[in-house]
Length: 175
Image (cartoon, rainbow, N blue to C red; front, side, top):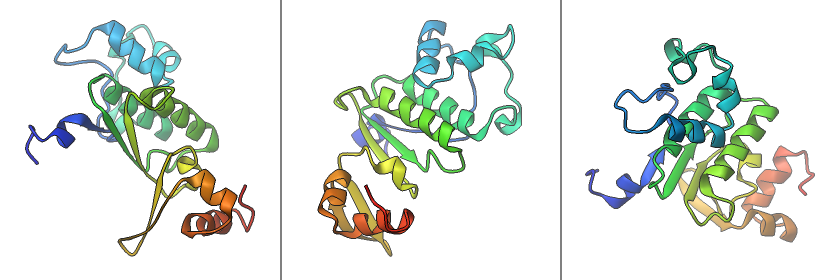
């Protein structure tokens, strides 16, 4: 895609490879970086990484951070660009425990805004809990769209492909 394409320009991907706390090109002030870390639920952790603060060294592949913390660093980097209107998360809560999942969910909600009006969130997930707060869920099977539904409405109606997935994931108990 061309960089002038509005979807490319307005979308930021939270990629796990973007593990840098400092701003090597000095595009952002320390204050804006700290705000992004705060929104990503990482401020206290970064502050505890020693006297280097934002310049704390990340080991290769972020090995001195947990998997969830690496995801949150990626989210913080995305949050630095306040002009992006679309936030795409691909399996952002995969490979993390329930507590970290909650931190990531909280940070994501902070990123899109309380009313969801400031950014559009596109979530790609296998973990159904990750999708429960979404306005619309697209259920795919064999590469084809089989359902587009409000997850709360699907559970209340007790029917549809999404409801069946929730039933299956929770041993027949979807609430």
